[in-house]
Image (cartoon, rainbow, N blue to C red; front, side, top):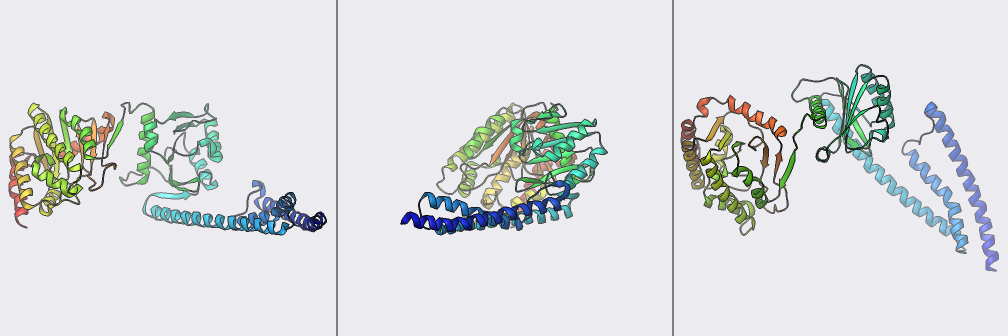
Length: 482
């Protein structure tokens, strides 16, 4: 009896199932036909949202009929409709999740477009393309390449160029017509190696430059400035601007520096080390300073070696909290650092420091040693007197006072090591608070920057007696005026 009922149930069910499946096939064929006709020579493409999601849901509901029937008949279930509606519920749930994800991506895309519109209005970006395969981008690039005899492409941390088919075809045609192409990337090319001049970016550079995309057409520039879904948005800069704040200038410098690096123009190895605690900072920086022949420094407050051990301990307690394990390391580091510093001056090491007068006055007036630390008036006065005494007595220690605004603070050791350090405060163990870049070629620019500022300071503002007098009069006046 049960077999007869099952057969009857499934006879009726399959009549509905085949009918719905036939309707689905007809609708799908019509959709494909109209899409092909509408797209013309481009052929078939999926419809745009939200029609695409509706089509997917419709097809899921249609093809769920035979799936539910097969599952029910195999399990000898007398309820194929329950199975069908359960699968429909699952399809509807997946549809809702799909629409929610699309809505999130749409909001992200809209936010990115709004940001790009603001950047475009404020910079020299001429136009922004949706992705590397955007037909407008391909057309613009093709026109720019016609006016050039060479092109340089930089791509780091993105899909290989040969996966961006329209872009690759455009570059290949340019190369086949006699244009010179250089590709700088962190991924190997799978084809076309005979057409392009390919350079592999060293691993350390690829790690620091993830997400870089640029094309230089000897004039116009294209630069990837944002990611949307799996594509890049590409900005076009019209010509090489000479403005110091121009994004086009930044792109030009970036790709030329990378080119010099891979071609051997920057032939000195670069090593980057990071410190994440006072103890690590001591291990990283103290050996460099101990054997240094020259130290050039741009500090933002009076160098800590001129503070007494008691003052250093008070700074550590405020910075790390009373009882912190970092306090002992901090005090010992600066005690040893001060000892090594004076030993180095005695053996002939030259140390030059440049201070901005306004920053020093604000430092003394506010007595703020970083964000969390406030020195007492006696502690600041003691620091000023110790500093003034060293300026007046150590011929190898030179200070320049300037009104010129200074960039971020840094230290150069022997023109080879570039050190930046910023204390974080409490609970900073394991967090990076300093790094050191070792490389002669890398240090040339900050060293040149230091020399420009140093040489622009009048000799009177570098004379030790004048500097010591300014510390004892002007700075102490600021301190005592409060």
